[in-house]
Amino acid sequence: MRTAQLIKASGLSKDTLRYYEKMGLMPTPQRSSNNYKYYPESTVELLAFIVTAKKLGFTLNEIKNTLHLFYDEDLYCDSAIDLLKNKLLEVSKMIKQLEIQKKSLQGEIKYFKNKKSK
Picture 1 (cartoon, rainbow, N blue to C red):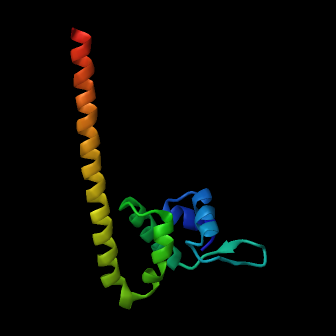
Picture 2: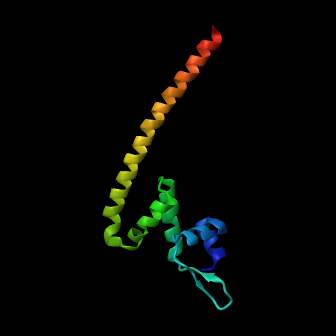
C-alpha cells in the first residue's frame, strides 16, 4: 500500500506518518524502484492501535515502549490489562488533583467576588 492509500485508510496526515516513522512507531516501509514507499496492509491496524492508545491517554513514548505487545498475541491481553489498569490509576490520580485545583479556583473566585462587593 502506498502512502496516499495509507493516509486515506488511517485518516492520519502525511506529516503524522512521517513523525511516527521517525519515532520508530512504524516499521520502515519498503521502497519500490521508483522510490515510492510501500507499507504492509497490517500498518493500518498498527496505526489504529496507536490512535486508540493515544485516545486512552498513552504518550507516544509509552506506546513505543509497548509496541512489542502488539506483535505478540500471547503477551497481548494480559499485558494490555496491566497497562490499562496502570493508566486508569494514573488518570484517577490526575482527576483527584484536578478536583483539588478546581476547588482552589472556586475559592479564589469567591474570595475576589466578596472582596469586590465590599
